[in-house]
Length: 279
Length: 279
Image (cartoon, rainbow over all chains, first blue to last red; front, side, top):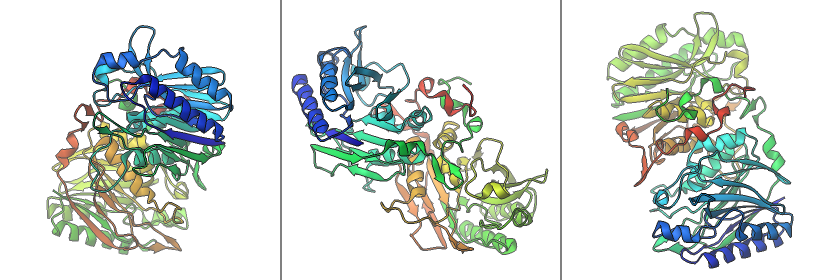
Protein backbone atom coordinates (compact mmCIF):
# COMPACT_ATOMS: atom_id res chain seq x y z
CA UNK A 1 0.00 0.00 0.00
CA UNK A 2 1.33 3.32 -1.09
CA UNK A 3 1.06 6.58 0.85
CA UNK A 4 1.52 9.89 -0.93
CA UNK A 5 1.91 13.36 0.58
CA UNK A 6 1.25 16.12 -1.95
CA UNK A 7 3.30 19.10 -0.84
CA UNK A 8 1.97 21.82 -3.10
CA UNK A 9 1.30 25.56 -2.78
CA UNK A 10 -2.27 26.76 -2.26
CA UNK A 11 -2.68 30.48 -2.84
CA UNK A 12 -4.42 32.73 -0.39
CA UNK A 13 -6.90 35.06 -2.06
CA UNK A 14 -7.47 32.64 -4.91
CA UNK A 15 -9.57 29.74 -3.60
CA UNK A 16 -10.39 28.53 -7.11
CA UNK A 17 -6.73 28.15 -8.01
CA UNK A 18 -6.02 26.52 -4.64
CA UNK A 19 -8.81 23.98 -5.05
CA UNK A 20 -7.73 23.22 -8.62
CA UNK A 21 -4.14 22.63 -7.49
CA UNK A 22 -5.33 20.32 -4.71
CA UNK A 23 -7.36 18.28 -7.19
CA UNK A 24 -4.49 18.15 -9.68
CA UNK A 25 -2.03 16.97 -7.02
CA UNK A 26 -4.52 14.40 -5.78
CA UNK A 27 -5.04 13.09 -9.31
CA UNK A 28 -1.30 12.70 -9.83
CA UNK A 29 -0.99 10.77 -6.56
CA UNK A 30 -3.89 8.45 -7.38
CA UNK A 31 -2.42 7.81 -10.82
CA UNK A 32 0.88 7.00 -9.11
CA UNK A 33 -0.93 4.21 -7.31
CA UNK A 34 -1.35 5.83 -3.90
CA UNK A 35 -3.94 4.19 -1.67
CA UNK A 36 -3.75 6.96 0.90
CA UNK A 37 -3.16 10.54 -0.18
CA UNK A 38 -2.51 13.35 2.28
CA UNK A 39 -2.96 16.99 1.25
CA UNK A 40 -1.81 20.08 3.18
CA UNK A 41 -3.80 22.05 5.73
CA UNK A 42 -6.20 24.59 4.20
CA UNK A 43 -5.54 23.14 0.76
CA UNK A 44 -8.47 25.05 -0.75
CA UNK A 45 -7.79 28.47 0.69
CA UNK A 46 -4.19 29.19 1.57
CA UNK A 47 -3.14 30.26 5.05
CA UNK A 48 -2.11 33.89 5.50
CA UNK A 49 -5.50 35.60 5.60
CA UNK A 50 -5.81 39.35 6.07
CA UNK A 51 -9.25 39.25 7.62
CA UNK A 52 -11.99 36.98 8.88
CA UNK A 53 -13.97 38.04 5.81
CA UNK A 54 -11.29 36.72 3.50
CA UNK A 55 -11.25 33.37 5.31
CA UNK A 56 -15.04 33.19 5.23
CA UNK A 57 -15.09 33.94 1.51
CA UNK A 58 -12.80 30.96 0.89
CA UNK A 59 -14.72 28.58 3.20
CA UNK A 60 -16.80 25.77 1.74
CA UNK A 61 -19.27 23.32 3.26
CA UNK A 62 -18.20 19.71 3.86
CA UNK A 63 -21.07 18.54 1.66
CA UNK A 64 -20.15 20.87 -1.19
CA UNK A 65 -18.36 20.51 -4.49
CA UNK A 66 -14.79 20.47 -3.14
CA UNK A 67 -14.99 17.25 -1.17
CA UNK A 68 -17.32 15.69 -3.73
CA UNK A 69 -14.57 16.24 -6.28
CA UNK A 70 -11.97 14.67 -3.96
CA UNK A 71 -14.27 11.64 -3.56
CA UNK A 72 -14.66 11.37 -7.31
CA UNK A 73 -10.90 11.39 -7.89
CA UNK A 74 -10.38 8.95 -5.00
CA UNK A 75 -12.94 6.59 -6.49
CA UNK A 76 -10.85 6.37 -9.66
CA UNK A 77 -8.11 4.56 -7.72
CA UNK A 78 -9.84 3.18 -4.63
CA UNK A 79 -7.93 5.80 -2.70
CA UNK A 80 -8.49 7.44 0.67
CA UNK A 81 -7.78 11.17 0.91
CA UNK A 82 -7.01 13.17 4.03
CA UNK A 83 -6.81 16.86 3.31
CA UNK A 84 -7.19 20.15 5.07
CA UNK A 85 -9.83 22.62 4.02
CA UNK A 86 -11.31 25.92 5.10
CA UNK A 87 -14.78 24.86 6.25
CA UNK A 88 -18.00 26.83 6.38
CA UNK A 89 -20.18 25.09 8.96
CA UNK A 90 -23.98 24.86 8.78
CA UNK A 91 -24.22 27.39 11.61
CA UNK A 92 -22.11 29.91 9.71
CA UNK A 93 -18.89 29.44 11.69
CA UNK A 94 -15.58 28.93 9.90
CA UNK A 95 -13.22 26.11 10.90
CA UNK A 96 -9.72 24.96 10.01
CA UNK A 97 -10.77 21.39 9.20
CA UNK A 98 -9.50 18.18 7.69
CA UNK A 99 -11.68 15.70 5.86
CA UNK A 100 -11.22 12.00 5.29
CA UNK A 101 -12.81 11.15 1.97
CA UNK A 102 -12.94 7.95 -0.06
CA UNK A 103 -14.86 6.80 -3.12
CA UNK A 104 -18.02 6.57 -1.03
CA UNK A 105 -17.83 10.24 -0.10
CA UNK A 106 -16.95 12.19 3.04
CA UNK A 107 -16.24 9.75 5.89
CA UNK A 108 -15.21 12.24 8.58
CA UNK A 109 -14.57 15.92 9.16
CA UNK A 110 -12.23 16.96 11.96
CA UNK A 111 -12.10 20.57 13.15
CA UNK A 112 -8.66 21.56 14.43
CA UNK A 113 -8.56 21.64 18.22
CA UNK A 114 -5.35 23.63 18.70
CA UNK A 115 -5.20 26.90 16.79
CA UNK A 116 -1.89 28.60 16.05
CA UNK A 117 -0.96 32.27 15.81
CA UNK A 118 -3.62 34.41 14.16
CA UNK A 119 -5.91 31.47 13.44
CA UNK A 120 -8.38 32.33 16.25
CA UNK A 121 -9.03 35.59 14.39
CA UNK A 122 -10.64 33.65 11.52
CA UNK A 123 -11.44 30.20 12.84
CA UNK A 124 -13.57 28.77 15.60
CA UNK A 125 -11.91 26.08 17.70
CA UNK A 126 -12.91 22.48 17.11
CA UNK A 127 -15.25 21.01 19.67
CA UNK A 128 -14.80 17.28 19.18
CA UNK A 129 -11.88 14.86 19.54
CA UNK A 130 -9.64 13.98 16.63
CA UNK A 131 -11.16 10.91 14.96
CA UNK A 132 -9.91 7.46 13.95
CA UNK A 133 -11.59 6.10 10.82
CA UNK A 134 -11.61 2.51 9.61
CA UNK A 135 -10.72 2.44 5.92
CA UNK A 136 -9.95 -0.17 3.30
CA UNK A 137 -6.25 0.24 4.09
CA UNK A 138 -6.32 0.37 7.87
CA UNK A 139 -7.38 2.73 10.63
CA UNK A 140 -6.48 6.35 10.02
CA UNK A 141 -6.28 9.00 12.72
CA UNK A 142 -6.61 12.61 11.57
CA UNK A 143 -5.00 15.68 13.12
CA UNK A 144 -3.84 19.07 11.80
CA UNK A 145 -0.47 20.85 12.08
CA UNK A 146 -0.04 22.35 15.59
CA UNK A 147 -1.98 19.36 17.01
CA UNK A 148 1.30 17.47 16.54
CA UNK A 149 2.80 19.44 19.45
CA UNK A 150 0.27 17.83 21.81
CA UNK A 151 1.43 14.33 22.72
CA UNK A 152 -1.90 13.68 24.41
CA UNK A 153 -3.62 13.98 21.05
CA UNK A 154 -1.30 11.76 19.01
CA UNK A 155 -1.03 9.18 21.80
CA UNK A 156 -4.82 9.25 22.10
CA UNK A 157 -5.19 8.46 18.39
CA UNK A 158 -2.88 5.46 18.83
CA UNK A 159 -4.82 4.30 21.90
CA UNK A 160 -8.00 4.46 19.84
CA UNK A 161 -6.45 2.15 17.28
CA UNK A 162 -4.94 4.39 14.60
CA UNK A 163 -2.42 2.57 12.41
CA UNK A 164 -1.56 5.81 10.65
CA UNK A 165 -1.82 9.41 11.78
CA UNK A 166 -2.42 11.56 8.69
CA UNK A 167 -1.65 15.17 9.38
CA UNK A 168 -2.21 18.05 6.98
CA UNK A 169 0.15 20.89 7.86
CA UNK A 170 1.05 24.51 7.03
CA UNK A 171 4.18 25.03 9.15
CA UNK A 172 5.24 28.70 8.97
CA UNK A 173 8.94 28.90 8.31
CA UNK A 174 10.85 30.05 11.35
CA UNK A 175 14.34 31.36 11.90
CA UNK A 176 16.66 28.37 11.44
CA UNK A 177 17.34 26.87 14.87
CA UNK A 178 20.84 26.92 16.30
CA UNK A 179 20.82 23.11 16.24
CA UNK A 180 19.52 22.81 12.67
CA UNK A 181 16.70 20.61 13.99
CA UNK A 182 13.45 20.50 12.03
CA UNK A 183 10.81 20.72 14.74
CA UNK A 184 7.93 19.20 12.76
CA UNK A 185 10.17 16.29 11.80
CA UNK A 186 11.25 15.77 15.43
CA UNK A 187 7.61 15.73 16.49
CA UNK A 188 6.58 13.30 13.74
CA UNK A 189 9.41 10.88 14.53
CA UNK A 190 8.59 10.96 18.19
CA UNK A 191 4.85 10.43 17.72
CA UNK A 192 5.56 7.46 15.44
CA UNK A 193 8.23 5.89 17.63
CA UNK A 194 6.52 6.23 21.00
CA UNK A 195 3.22 4.73 19.84
CA UNK A 196 4.48 2.50 17.03
CA UNK A 197 2.23 4.07 14.42
CA UNK A 198 2.83 5.41 10.94
CA UNK A 199 2.76 9.19 10.66
CA UNK A 200 2.24 10.99 7.34
CA UNK A 201 2.70 14.74 7.53
CA UNK A 202 1.79 16.76 4.44
CA UNK A 203 3.13 20.29 4.73
CA UNK A 204 2.71 22.94 2.06
CA UNK A 205 5.14 24.71 -0.26
CA UNK A 206 5.35 28.32 -1.37
CA UNK A 207 5.13 31.69 0.27
CA UNK A 208 2.20 33.97 1.05
CA UNK A 209 2.35 37.66 1.89
CA UNK A 210 5.96 37.34 2.99
CA UNK A 211 5.41 34.19 5.04
CA UNK A 212 7.29 31.11 3.86
CA UNK A 213 6.50 27.56 4.87
CA UNK A 214 8.84 24.81 6.03
CA UNK A 215 7.93 22.22 3.41
CA UNK A 216 8.51 19.63 6.13
CA UNK A 217 6.42 16.77 4.75
CA UNK A 218 7.54 13.40 6.05
CA UNK A 219 6.33 9.81 6.20
CA UNK A 220 7.59 7.88 9.22
CA UNK A 221 7.22 4.20 10.09
CA UNK A 222 6.29 2.74 13.48
CA UNK A 223 9.97 2.21 14.28
CA UNK A 224 10.44 5.98 14.02
CA UNK A 225 12.45 5.61 10.81
CA UNK A 226 11.73 8.00 7.95
CA UNK A 227 10.20 6.37 4.88
CA UNK A 228 10.23 9.54 2.79
CA UNK A 229 10.99 13.17 3.55
CA UNK A 230 10.71 16.38 1.58
CA UNK A 231 13.98 17.82 0.36
CA UNK A 232 14.66 21.00 2.36
CA UNK A 233 13.86 23.98 0.20
CA UNK A 234 12.49 21.87 -2.66
CA UNK A 235 9.05 23.43 -2.53
CA UNK A 236 6.46 21.54 -4.54
CA UNK A 237 7.10 17.84 -4.15
CA UNK A 238 5.22 14.55 -3.88
CA UNK A 239 6.44 12.09 -1.25
CA UNK A 240 5.77 8.41 -1.81
CA UNK A 241 6.31 5.57 0.64
CA UNK A 242 5.16 1.97 0.36
CA UNK A 243 3.93 0.86 3.76
CA UNK A 244 2.27 -2.13 5.35
CA UNK A 245 0.00 -0.44 7.86
CA UNK A 246 -0.58 -3.74 9.67
CA UNK A 247 2.95 -3.34 11.08
CA UNK A 248 1.44 -0.73 13.40
CA UNK A 249 -0.70 -3.41 15.07
CA UNK A 250 2.42 -4.96 16.57
CA UNK A 251 3.20 -2.76 19.55
CA UNK A 252 6.15 -4.81 20.79
CA UNK A 253 9.19 -2.59 21.21
CA UNK A 254 11.45 -5.30 22.63
CA UNK A 255 11.32 -9.03 23.35
CA UNK A 256 9.44 -8.46 26.60
CA UNK A 257 7.87 -5.07 26.09
CA UNK A 258 4.87 -3.49 24.41
CA UNK A 259 4.63 0.25 24.06
CA UNK A 260 0.91 0.46 24.83
CA UNK A 261 0.43 -2.54 27.15
CA UNK A 262 3.32 -1.29 29.31
CA UNK A 263 1.44 1.93 30.09
CA UNK A 264 0.44 2.59 33.72
CA UNK A 265 -2.59 4.82 33.17
CA UNK A 266 -3.69 4.72 36.79
CA UNK A 267 -0.49 6.57 37.69
CA UNK A 268 -0.56 9.33 35.07
CA UNK A 269 -1.49 12.87 36.03
CA UNK A 270 -5.25 13.36 36.07
CA UNK A 271 -4.67 16.80 34.58
CA UNK A 272 -3.91 15.14 31.25
CA UNK A 273 -7.62 14.71 30.60
CA UNK A 274 -9.13 17.16 33.06
CA UNK A 275 -10.48 20.53 31.97
CA UNK A 276 -8.31 23.50 32.97
CA UNK A 277 -8.87 24.49 36.56
CA UNK A 278 -10.53 21.19 37.56
CA UNK A 279 -9.11 19.27 40.52
CA UNK B 1 22.62 27.37 38.29
CA UNK B 2 24.70 24.49 37.07
CA UNK B 3 23.38 21.03 36.21
CA UNK B 4 25.76 18.07 36.05
CA UNK B 5 25.10 14.58 34.72
CA UNK B 6 27.68 12.06 35.95
CA UNK B 7 27.88 9.38 33.29
CA UNK B 8 29.98 6.76 35.04
CA UNK B 9 30.10 2.94 35.06
CA UNK B 10 28.59 1.08 38.00
CA UNK B 11 29.62 -2.55 38.14
CA UNK B 12 27.13 -5.35 38.57
CA UNK B 13 28.21 -7.87 41.21
CA UNK B 14 30.23 -5.25 43.07
CA UNK B 15 27.79 -2.94 44.87
CA UNK B 16 30.52 -1.48 47.07
CA UNK B 17 32.58 -0.37 44.08
CA UNK B 18 29.43 0.95 42.37
CA UNK B 19 28.38 2.99 45.41
CA UNK B 20 31.91 4.34 45.80
CA UNK B 21 32.03 5.42 42.16
CA UNK B 22 28.65 7.13 42.50
CA UNK B 23 29.88 9.07 45.54
CA UNK B 24 33.15 9.99 43.84
CA UNK B 25 31.35 11.25 40.73
CA UNK B 26 28.89 13.18 42.88
CA UNK B 27 31.75 14.80 44.82
CA UNK B 28 33.45 15.89 41.61
CA UNK B 29 30.21 17.44 40.34
CA UNK B 30 29.54 19.29 43.59
CA UNK B 31 33.12 20.59 43.60
CA UNK B 32 32.56 21.76 40.02
CA UNK B 33 29.78 23.94 41.36
CA UNK B 34 26.77 21.90 40.28
CA UNK B 35 23.54 22.80 42.05
CA UNK B 36 21.71 19.81 40.59
CA UNK B 37 23.55 16.54 40.01
CA UNK B 38 21.99 13.61 38.16
CA UNK B 39 23.42 10.10 38.53
CA UNK B 40 22.57 7.06 36.38
CA UNK B 41 19.87 4.48 37.03
CA UNK B 42 20.90 1.75 39.51
CA UNK B 43 24.04 3.70 40.34
CA UNK B 44 24.74 1.51 43.37
CA UNK B 45 24.25 -1.90 41.80
CA UNK B 46 24.82 -2.08 38.06
CA UNK B 47 22.16 -3.36 35.69
CA UNK B 48 22.72 -6.77 34.13
CA UNK B 49 21.75 -9.05 37.00
CA UNK B 50 21.85 -12.82 36.65
CA UNK B 51 19.21 -13.53 39.26
CA UNK B 52 16.72 -11.92 41.60
CA UNK B 53 19.03 -12.94 44.45
CA UNK B 54 21.87 -10.92 42.98
CA UNK B 55 19.63 -7.83 42.68
CA UNK B 56 18.37 -8.32 46.21
CA UNK B 57 21.91 -8.62 47.55
CA UNK B 58 22.75 -5.23 46.03
CA UNK B 59 19.56 -3.52 47.23
CA UNK B 60 19.68 -0.96 50.03
CA UNK B 61 17.00 0.83 52.03
CA UNK B 62 16.18 4.46 51.26
CA UNK B 63 17.01 5.37 54.87
CA UNK B 64 20.37 3.58 54.80
CA UNK B 65 23.96 4.65 54.39
CA UNK B 66 23.94 5.16 50.63
CA UNK B 67 21.49 8.03 50.45
CA UNK B 68 22.79 9.45 53.75
CA UNK B 69 26.19 9.69 52.10
CA UNK B 70 24.68 11.41 49.03
CA UNK B 71 22.98 13.91 51.36
CA UNK B 72 26.27 14.56 53.14
CA UNK B 73 28.10 15.26 49.88
CA UNK B 74 25.18 17.39 48.63
CA UNK B 75 25.26 19.44 51.84
CA UNK B 76 28.87 20.37 51.09
CA UNK B 77 27.74 22.40 48.08
CA UNK B 78 24.05 23.10 48.70
CA UNK B 79 23.38 20.65 45.91
CA UNK B 80 20.37 18.55 44.98
CA UNK B 81 21.04 14.98 43.79
CA UNK B 82 18.78 12.80 41.68
CA UNK B 83 20.17 9.31 41.32
CA UNK B 84 18.98 5.81 40.60
CA UNK B 85 19.46 3.07 43.15
CA UNK B 86 18.51 -0.53 43.71
CA UNK B 87 16.07 -0.26 46.61
CA UNK B 88 15.17 -2.75 49.29
CA UNK B 89 11.73 -1.74 50.55
CA UNK B 90 10.52 -2.17 54.14
CA UNK B 91 8.28 -5.00 53.00
CA UNK B 92 11.20 -6.88 51.46
CA UNK B 93 10.42 -6.09 47.83
CA UNK B 94 13.13 -4.80 45.49
CA UNK B 95 12.55 -1.75 43.30
CA UNK B 96 14.36 0.09 40.55
CA UNK B 97 14.14 3.49 42.23
CA UNK B 98 15.41 7.03 42.01
CA UNK B 99 15.90 9.30 44.99
CA UNK B 100 15.96 13.06 45.24
CA UNK B 101 18.31 14.01 48.03
CA UNK B 102 19.59 17.34 49.29
CA UNK B 103 21.54 18.49 52.31
CA UNK B 104 18.47 17.92 54.49
CA UNK B 105 18.30 14.25 53.53
CA UNK B 106 16.05 12.14 51.31
CA UNK B 107 13.27 14.30 49.90
CA UNK B 108 11.57 11.73 47.66
CA UNK B 109 11.90 8.18 46.42
CA UNK B 110 10.32 7.23 43.10
CA UNK B 111 9.91 3.60 42.10
CA UNK B 112 10.09 3.09 38.34
CA UNK B 113 6.65 2.58 36.84
CA UNK B 114 7.67 1.12 33.47
CA UNK B 115 10.04 -1.82 33.64
CA UNK B 116 12.16 -2.81 30.65
CA UNK B 117 13.34 -6.22 29.45
CA UNK B 118 14.30 -8.58 32.26
CA UNK B 119 13.67 -6.01 34.99
CA UNK B 120 10.37 -7.62 36.11
CA UNK B 121 12.43 -10.70 37.02
CA UNK B 122 14.17 -8.75 39.79
CA UNK B 123 12.08 -5.67 40.43
CA UNK B 124 8.54 -4.97 41.56
CA UNK B 125 6.72 -2.31 39.59
CA UNK B 126 6.31 1.11 41.16
CA UNK B 127 2.87 1.84 42.53
CA UNK B 128 2.83 5.62 42.74
CA UNK B 129 3.09 8.47 40.22
CA UNK B 130 6.40 10.05 39.33
CA UNK B 131 6.88 12.99 41.73
CA UNK B 132 7.64 16.70 41.36
CA UNK B 133 9.70 18.10 44.24
CA UNK B 134 10.19 21.76 45.14
CA UNK B 135 13.89 22.42 45.69
CA UNK B 136 16.11 25.41 46.25
CA UNK B 137 16.75 25.56 42.50
CA UNK B 138 13.26 24.97 41.15
CA UNK B 139 10.75 22.15 40.82
CA UNK B 140 12.26 18.85 39.78
CA UNK B 141 10.29 15.96 38.28
CA UNK B 142 11.87 12.53 38.59
CA UNK B 143 11.55 9.61 36.18
CA UNK B 144 13.76 6.67 35.18
CA UNK B 145 14.98 5.48 31.76
CA UNK B 146 12.16 3.68 29.88
CA UNK B 147 9.66 6.09 31.50
CA UNK B 148 10.90 8.56 28.88
CA UNK B 149 9.07 6.56 26.17
CA UNK B 150 5.75 7.43 27.83
CA UNK B 151 4.71 10.93 26.84
CA UNK B 152 1.86 10.76 29.38
CA UNK B 153 4.42 10.60 32.16
CA UNK B 154 6.72 13.40 31.04
CA UNK B 155 3.80 15.65 30.09
CA UNK B 156 2.21 14.87 33.44
CA UNK B 157 5.36 16.03 35.25
CA UNK B 158 5.24 19.30 33.32
CA UNK B 159 1.54 19.73 34.12
CA UNK B 160 2.36 19.27 37.78
CA UNK B 161 4.84 22.10 37.56
CA UNK B 162 8.23 20.49 36.91
CA UNK B 163 10.80 22.97 35.62
CA UNK B 164 13.30 20.16 35.09
CA UNK B 165 12.79 16.46 34.48
CA UNK B 166 15.80 14.63 35.92
CA UNK B 167 16.06 11.15 34.53
CA UNK B 168 18.60 8.52 35.59
CA UNK B 169 19.09 6.04 32.74
CA UNK B 170 20.79 2.75 31.79
CA UNK B 171 20.01 2.54 28.07
CA UNK B 172 21.18 -0.83 26.71
CA UNK B 173 23.12 -0.29 23.52
CA UNK B 174 21.17 -1.43 20.48
CA UNK B 175 22.12 -2.17 16.91
CA UNK B 176 22.81 1.21 15.30
CA UNK B 177 19.64 2.38 13.60
CA UNK B 178 19.54 2.78 9.85
CA UNK B 179 18.93 6.50 10.33
CA UNK B 180 21.71 6.99 12.88
CA UNK B 181 19.14 8.49 15.25
CA UNK B 182 19.81 8.27 18.99
CA UNK B 183 16.43 7.26 20.40
CA UNK B 184 16.99 8.49 23.97
CA UNK B 185 18.14 11.84 22.62
CA UNK B 186 15.08 12.09 20.33
CA UNK B 187 12.83 11.37 23.30
CA UNK B 188 14.59 13.89 25.55
CA UNK B 189 14.42 16.66 22.94
CA UNK B 190 10.78 16.00 22.33
CA UNK B 191 9.82 15.93 26.02
CA UNK B 192 11.65 19.22 26.57
CA UNK B 193 10.28 20.95 23.48
CA UNK B 194 6.63 19.92 23.76
CA UNK B 195 6.29 20.96 27.42
CA UNK B 196 8.94 23.70 27.56
CA UNK B 197 10.83 22.08 30.42
CA UNK B 198 14.48 21.29 31.00
CA UNK B 199 15.38 17.61 30.71
CA UNK B 200 18.58 16.16 32.20
CA UNK B 201 19.21 12.53 31.25
CA UNK B 202 22.09 10.78 33.00
CA UNK B 203 22.91 7.53 31.23
CA UNK B 204 25.69 5.16 32.30
CA UNK B 205 28.97 4.15 30.69
CA UNK B 206 30.69 0.78 30.47
CA UNK B 207 29.68 -2.75 29.65
CA UNK B 208 28.35 -5.58 31.79
CA UNK B 209 28.27 -9.27 30.88
CA UNK B 210 28.44 -8.45 27.20
CA UNK B 211 25.83 -5.69 27.34
CA UNK B 212 27.04 -2.22 26.40
CA UNK B 213 25.21 0.98 27.19
CA UNK B 214 24.48 3.96 24.96
CA UNK B 215 26.11 6.63 27.06
CA UNK B 216 23.36 8.94 25.84
CA UNK B 217 23.41 11.53 28.62
CA UNK B 218 22.03 14.86 27.51
CA UNK B 219 20.83 18.15 29.00
CA UNK B 220 18.15 19.90 26.94
CA UNK B 221 16.58 23.33 27.40
CA UNK B 222 12.88 24.20 27.18
CA UNK B 223 13.33 25.26 23.56
CA UNK B 224 14.39 21.67 22.77
CA UNK B 225 17.98 22.79 22.16
CA UNK B 226 20.78 20.66 23.59
CA UNK B 227 22.81 22.35 26.33
CA UNK B 228 25.29 19.50 26.70
CA UNK B 229 25.48 15.99 25.31
CA UNK B 230 27.76 13.03 25.89
CA UNK B 231 30.27 12.35 23.15
CA UNK B 232 29.21 9.13 21.39
CA UNK B 233 31.43 6.31 22.58
CA UNK B 234 33.22 8.48 25.15
CA UNK B 235 32.20 6.33 28.10
CA UNK B 236 32.82 7.98 31.45
CA UNK B 237 32.04 11.68 31.17
CA UNK B 238 30.57 14.52 33.17
CA UNK B 239 28.14 16.84 31.39
CA UNK B 240 27.78 20.37 32.64
CA UNK B 241 25.21 22.94 31.58
CA UNK B 242 24.45 26.28 33.18
CA UNK B 243 20.69 26.76 33.18
CA UNK B 244 18.13 29.21 34.49
CA UNK B 245 15.31 26.87 35.45
CA UNK B 246 12.87 29.77 35.70
CA UNK B 247 12.87 29.83 31.87
CA UNK B 248 10.66 26.74 32.09
CA UNK B 249 7.90 28.79 33.76
CA UNK B 250 7.35 30.66 30.52
CA UNK B 251 5.24 28.30 28.42
CA UNK B 252 4.78 30.68 25.49
CA UNK B 253 5.82 29.00 22.27
CA UNK B 254 4.84 31.85 20.00
CA UNK B 255 3.49 35.40 20.27
CA UNK B 256 -0.09 34.13 20.71
CA UNK B 257 0.44 30.60 21.97
CA UNK B 258 1.22 28.74 25.17
CA UNK B 259 2.11 25.07 25.09
CA UNK B 260 0.13 24.14 28.21
CA UNK B 261 -2.69 26.71 28.14
CA UNK B 262 -3.45 25.74 24.52
CA UNK B 263 -4.27 22.17 25.59
CA UNK B 264 -7.84 20.92 25.09
CA UNK B 265 -8.00 18.28 27.82
CA UNK B 266 -11.74 17.75 27.50
CA UNK B 267 -11.13 16.40 24.00
CA UNK B 268 -8.26 14.00 24.71
CA UNK B 269 -8.85 10.25 24.79
CA UNK B 270 -10.12 9.12 28.18
CA UNK B 271 -7.94 6.02 27.79
CA UNK B 272 -4.90 8.19 28.51
CA UNK B 273 -5.67 8.05 32.23
CA UNK B 274 -8.04 5.09 32.42
CA UNK B 275 -6.90 1.70 33.66
CA UNK B 276 -6.54 -0.93 30.94
CA UNK B 277 -9.89 -2.42 30.00
CA UNK B 278 -11.93 0.40 31.57
CA UNK B 279 -14.50 2.16 29.40
